[in-house]
Structures are given as C-alpha cells and as structure tokens.
Length: 102
Length: 371
View 1: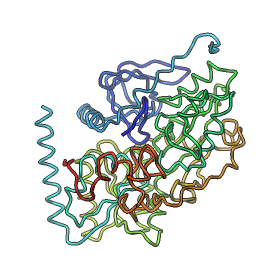
View 2: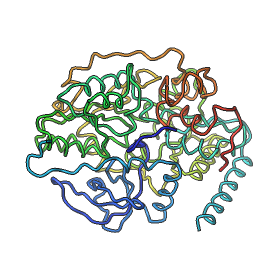
View 3: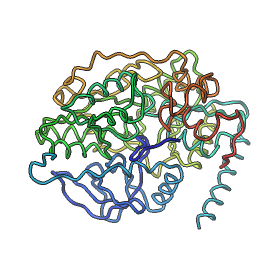
View 4: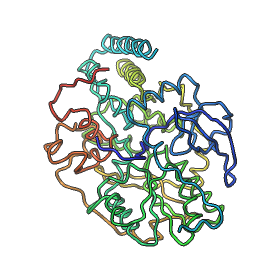
C-alpha cells in the first residue's frame, strides 16, 4: 500500500507518556513520548493529566487518559498496523521575531 | 514476552468466537462503523474467525473516504492561489480531485504543507503574515476538538490570516441514514471507540431505542472487535436493543466535556454531503457565524464548485453495508489505491483499500492473514 511521510490516520488516537508540561501562547502543552519519538501535544482537554501519565493523543491533542498497560498494548498494535505515520509529520518550529520566511 | 502475550490473546479470541458460535441461532449482519476497526478486521482476518452466519459489513467511518469530491476540488482551487499556504493532514494529499491531487499541485509549486496538528497552522500563520494560511479541516468528531481549538485561538489572538476549509462529518446521523435506507441489512452496530471517547455515547441511545438496534461501543484491537461482536450477538439473540460499552477502559458515557464545550462554541450542526452517499441532513459541522472570518469556503468564494462522481463506483452501497468490495466489477482492476474511482478506495481505512492491501482482490474467500 502506498503511503507518504506524515500520513495521518484521522480516526485513531495514539497513546503516549507525558514527559513535561509548558505553556505555549496561553495553551497548556506537553512533550509526549511515543515509543522512541517525542512530540508536542495540547493538554487543554485533559486538564487532570499530570507528568508521567499516559494519554491518547489525536492530531496533536490529548483526548483521554489511559493506564500504562493499555497504552503499551495499543501502541504496539498501531505499530503493527502501520498506523503511526502521523508522528512522522514535519515539526513546525516557531521562528522568533516577525518570522517572515526568507 | 510478546509471544506469551499474543498466545494468550489468541486463546482469548478463540474463547470469544466459541461463545459466539455457541449462542448464535440464526444469521446476523453487524456493521463496524469506524475505519480503524475495518482495517483491524481485514488485517487480522477476524471476519473469517467468526461463524459464517455472522456477517461483518464495513461502515462509513473513514473520514478521508467520505470527504466529497467537490470539497477536494475546492481545496485544490484554494491551494493553487499564490498567496496561500495550504495545510493538511498527510492522508489528504494523495486523494485525487477531478484533475489532480495535492501532491501534484505541490510539485508544480503550490505551497502545500503537511501538518501534525492544526495548531501548527497557527505557527505558520504567525510566521508568514503576508500569506493566507488555510487548513483542510476534515474528519469525524475525533478531529473536531483540535480544529475548534485552532480557530478559537486564532480569533482570540487576532490571527487574521488563518482560515479552515470545513468538511466535518458526524457518526450518529450516518448510522440513522443507514437504518432509514429501504435496502438496509444492518441489524447491529459496533460503535466507534475514539469518537465516543470525545462525544460520549448518550447520543446513540436515542438511535438504538428508535430503530430497535443494538449498538456496542467497541475498541479497535482484535479482541475488542470480537468481544463487541459477541455483545451485539447476545443482544440480538435475546431480542434486546441497547447501547453497551465494550471499550470502558477508554470511553465514558459522558465523553470529554471540555472538548465538547469548545466544539459547540466554534461549530454548529449543518447538512453535509458524504462522498458516495450524498447529502445527509444535519450530519456535519460548519463554523458558527462569529467565526466567519476564519471560514475558507466563504473567504475564497469556492462555495459554488460542484463535482460529479464516476458512475461505475458502488462505494455508496459499500458505505451503507449493502455491498462488499468484491461486488464491484472495477475493484482491483480499474480501481486500485493508485487509481481510486471512489470513496472506499482513497484511504487505507476504506473498505476497498483495506481489502486490496491484504490481497483480497486476488481471490474471494481465501486469506492467509489469520488472527
């Protein structure tokens, strides 16, 4: 099956572990670890989650908390199904200043 | 460890299918709604593990698949503009419109970017104040909270060069439309786990009661799907029609309240066209009037674009559970994932694409992928 870098499955969430929280433009964000990949996620919708908790992340937003066992098993299944490609989407880094592209 | 784990779940899977075999007295047709579930069923050959009298049919829950062709054409019309940075999830890029796909547009110089989250678009918009940044907001209830947040933040921050092209669809009206069809064969549903993690499942209770149909909210792991099937068959055999939750470890009846609140603030219910199916009343979201300055369809005046689909394609009947991919003469011949003719072949979550990916176009009824 043909697939492309960053191809997302817009139906399934991916479980990951919250490493640390920070604020970005007034939104509660966190670094979340998915297997060997760390990506940003917005935690506004799961305010009760804390550092070390596992959350299901969907298109960059945590949508629910899960336990570690569930997270590990689901992650492995998604990996087997080739459904982790959304994590390969390029990272957009905010430029300082007015950030006009060159 | 992995081996033991899988062995144990294989034994569990056998126990579940044995139980289904034991209690089932007549044939039943059950639809799994979510494309992730379809993918899992076909990959693991779960439908072959079930007794032949239990038929799983594949539902409309593939957001990429059901995005109407005219919406793809609208996206392309916007992406072609030199003043636009067009952002999308990766899986929309190779969906063909009437003329080409976003990859082709990108290769000819259009600024098309894959994003991981709609919030990425706000970063791009802040960094490119001389460009208009447009996000292709497709999906079911699962992506709506993310898209709602991006628009809400844009308005709050006064980011004027960000808009979204909305093609949001909802699961419950699609289930109701399937049940209202005179050709309907579906007698029970496996409800979509992650959609319900956000929206809860109270909406499904009215459908279950009105149409006398069991709906079991189900996860997408192989064992989840078999358990959900067992719970549905139990209800059918007992003449019950209720909403039950197989996926309690991730889904609560009320769903995610903070997400529902923001979605309701930014979006309102509207009629939507579904690729292959046609218009379904009150089956999607559009932006509320207060957010019209972020509505790409209005800003770029593409509302009038109207596109027809190829006549040979039977994806509408497949999405409603009336036909299977094999029933289509074009399946695997004229129509492949590289040259899709319709909805169910355009994304890996679509029934036709899943059947194709696991070799089911080669020979009907034979499959080497056991659980």
